Image (cartoon, rainbow, N blue to C red):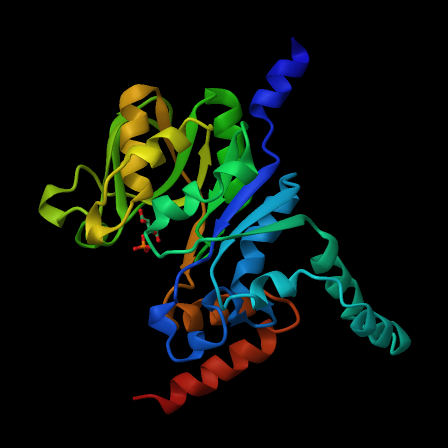
Length: 297
Ligand code: G1P
């Protein structure tokens, strides 16, 4: 009996959706996937992978598309590089080795840009019949415990799919998936419905979806049955709405600070904020910002 309970609540698989064109970052994203752009010295995608691995996840299914091979290459072992770093006693060796061995990376190509719902459906076969967590890699969510641990904890207690949400200013709701429902605890809500990019006046709440999402495999049947929604795309939010009408689904209000690495300005802000949190950069960056502030009018 114990074994069954464990399998039901343990999450070993993550899906990272990273197949988009990265239009907001053109022209750089012609050749560099937006998920590979640097936050100081780490690519954006590394934040989701680090958090997943720290929480015990072992397999990462990377939903990717043609031309974005740099993402999977980043996780490959490079013996010549490691040898060279070893010979130079480089302090970078440990991190280079860690990144290449931290998890099993399984790339899955999304052939057509049909939407986030379709991207997650592409992972169906690789996920199999077990619960899994989905990351939107542009969303850098930092907290203690991590967003991933908060989500896994909710899932372990509630035993249902759980969606990571955060309150946003009412005028911003139209940019996100929005959830509605009844609170079941201080930070958890049982969902009645979800809407993708509602008109602000019609939004059912100010709780926006940022992920991560923990799903039971039932989500795949919903993903197979949704029709194009907002923007003509197959929306993950519409599949969640369908799932919530069949079986209990919860949202978890995450206690995290959110950084948006999905736009050029957001990436710049995120990089500066993260540099201020890094002991090896903080002093220099603070001094630079003070100097810069004096030069601005
Ligand atoms: C996607 C999701 C949306 C979510 C948002 C968070 O939208 O469809 O539900 O709130 O990410 O960033 P996109 O930003 O791809 O339009």
